Image (tube, rainbow, N blue to C red; front, side, top):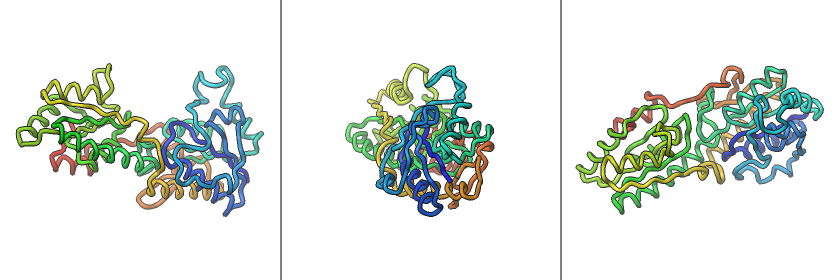
Length: 336
């Protein structure tokens, strides 16, 4: 049996560990052939592929990024490579010509929707969720999230020193357009005073009042963590907007720090390595059993699978009832 494997969308720590998990299990345990597809779905348009063996995947466990490369090519939308060509049909044809019995897609929400559409067209697809945002519906956690939270928490820890030394308010902007999981987990782990999420409305006046109240109680600095997707005036980044408004509201010197792509780089944490390895192994088991059109997922402590049709197009978002939000409020953390 010959399987293809591709990575699509943004990179994140743990992709290479997943590739390793799939390939080592497929080659060593099931005797399958594995074809690496370069640069996401773009590689299926151009048939840019390479053969994997156990030697070629050596050293992938700790490596960040993706050795296969990635792209944001969306075959079902206009634009991009080969605009004007019936790209979905060409990809289906190329999969057949390459002799691939199944395609393993590693990606986030956009890639999941693309995979679901190819599954509807009859392609044998198995999907692995990856995103630092942790917003893929149907899985309790995606690999990459733990690493991003660790990086963001370390940054918050370091900014505590500067904030207290200079008696400033420090605003830290982390990733999360629609889902505030990184802001919530890193903010709580880093002992932040204010955490602003896209899912929970906030009042900048209330934020200012909280900081002034801290000052009255002998706490002349504050740590504010914001997700990049919170509402602003539409002209500034989230961190810049919140920092300027806080300084206006309180008169306290305020500085912002944008972590940006730092959160997506570097070696994955042990937790992400193990999750990626388990998901990669389960993918190969699904393929061996002829179970296609499915996404591997973490449910509790177990790796399971769910139909891609049931989870594509949905988002896993923070709710006000989440334990960390509830506990944070009990401890005096302001969520807006």
